[in-house]
Amino acid sequence: MFFSLKYEIFKRIRRKYLPSNYFWGRVQTSKMSRKLPTAVRWCWFNDKTWQDYDKKVNEQLEADFQKKKKKIPCSKEHHVDLDFATDADIKKNFNNMELEKNLVGIQRRNDEPMKRRAVKREVPNIFKKEVFYIPRGFNDYILAAKVYGAEVENSINKTVTIFLCPESDVKNQTKEINKAQNYSIPIVGDDFLVDCITAGRRMDPKTYPLKIGKSDDKKRKGSGEGSDSKKAKWDEGEEAPKVASDDEGPPSELFLQDGCKWTGKCIYKKEGTEYPFVMKILESKDKKDKKKISGHIKWPTLKKSVTKFKGSFKNGKIEFEEYEIVKGKDEVEVPMKYKGKVTGKKISGEIDDKKLTATFKLDFFGRDDEDEKKKDKKDKTKDKKDKLPDLLELLKPQAKFNGVCFTVNTFAYSVFERENNSLQGTLAWENPKRKTKFKGSLNSSAATFDLEETMIKKDDDEPEKRVYHADGVREGDKEIVIYGTFLTQAKKKEDCLDGIFEISV
Image 1 (tube, rainbow, N blue to C red):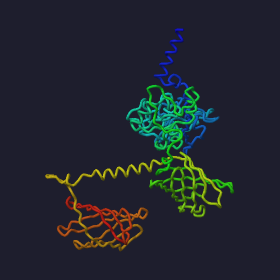
Image 2 (cartoon, rainbow, N blue to C red; image 1 turned 180 degrees about the vertical axis):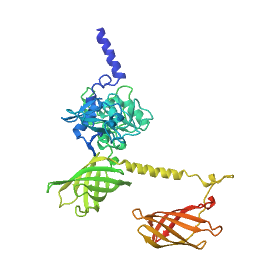
Image 3 (cartoon, rainbow, N blue to C red; image 1 turned 90 degrees about the vertical axis):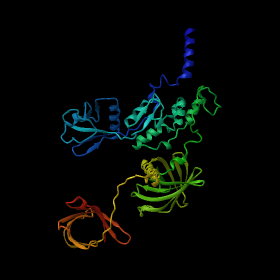
Image 4 (tube, rainbow, N blue to C red; image 1 turned 45 degrees about the vertical axis):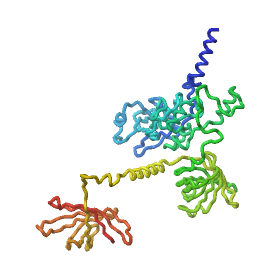
C-alpha cells in the first residue's frame, strides 16, 4: 500500500515537471534520431595523387573514428592505423608530406605492415560560426553539429543562432520554442541537418520552418486524450508553441526566392525517355497578387545545355517558359512552356504542348549562400554610403586636412624600333615643350609593358629618370586606351613624383 502510494506521487511529479523522455531519452538515441549521411572525406595517397575510399568504406572509417578505434579494416588486405599522437608522427614515415594537412593515420597491409600509405580525413566546415541548441538525448545530432564546425549550447540564449528541434520532440520543447521565438532564433527540423550534410554546405534555415507532423497528431488521438480533439493538449502551465499547422505546411514562396535551386526530371511518356534538369531562380519579385521569377535551366545529359526562363507563381500554381538558349542550340528547343503545382518542397506538372505528352517533377535542393552574401555586401555598401558624414560636420573651424593636387600634361608617344619584346621610342611633351627617349620591354602574355624615360633638366643638367608600368588595356569612347602608373626618380625628394598615365591608340 505504502509503495503504490509512493509510486503514484512519483508519477504525478514526473508528469508535471519532467519531460516524458527524461529517463530513457539517452538510451533510445538511435530510435529518436534519423540516420545521418556523412560529408567527411577519407582518402589515401598513391605516391602521386590522393584517392578517395568508396562510399561504404568511407562511412565505416568515419563511424569507427568517432568510436575512437585505433585500428580500422578498410579491405581484406589492408587496415588503417590511427595510433598516432600528432600528424608529425605520421610525416616521419614519408618524405613528401611536410606541407600536407589533415593527416590522421597510415594504411598498412595486414601481412606486411611496413608497406604503408598516408591517410587523411577532410571535414567541411559547414556550420562555421553557428551556435546550435539541440534538445538533450539527440547525441547523434549534437555530435554531427560539432564535427562540422558548430558550437552547441545547453540552453536557449542570445548567442544561439539555430534551434534544431526534431519533430518527434516538439511537445517536450514547448518552453524552449517560445523562448527561441522571443529571441527571433530560427527553429528548424532535423531535415535541415540532413540536407546540409548531404549538400556539404550550410542551407538557408528560413526554408526549413518547424511544423508539427501528421503522424504526431495520430499518436496523440490514440493516447486517451480524446480522438475528436483536433489540437494536441499540452501539460498544465505550458503554452503551446506557435508553429505551422499540418494543413498549412511550409510556405511555398520561401522556396522561390533568389538563389533557390530545384532538381528534377522531364518525362516524355511516348518516347519513354527522361531528361534530368536543374532550375535555378536568379531573381524573384513580388508584383501585386503574384510573384515573378526568372533564371536559368541546365540540362546535364543534353551536352550541358543551358536555357533562360521566366514565369510566375500564384495561389500554389506555377507557370514558366524557356525563351532563350544560352548553350546547346542543337540539343534543346525554345519556347517551351511548363505548368504545375507547388506543394512545399515539390513541384509537379506538365509541358503545355498538345503534341507532347510530357510531365515534369522537381524537388527543392537548397539556396546558394553566395547570393545571400552578395546581398549582404550590397546592403553593407549602402549602409556605408548612408553613414558618410555631412560636409558641415567636417568643415569646422580650426579643422586641418592633407591633400594632393594633380596637373594634366599631354604628350605624344612614338615607337621607332622594336626587336622581339624590346621597345625604343620618343615622348614629345607639351608643357614644357621637349622630347625624351625611352626604352623598355613588352610582356605580351599579360598585355603590359615597362618603360624607362631619361630626361635632362635645364637647371643643372642632372639626368632624371621616369619609370612607366602599363597595367592593362580598356575600351574608351572612340579608341582603345592603355593605362598605368609612373614614378619619377630624382635626387631631390621634391622632384620625386608619381601618378597615372593614359595613352589613346
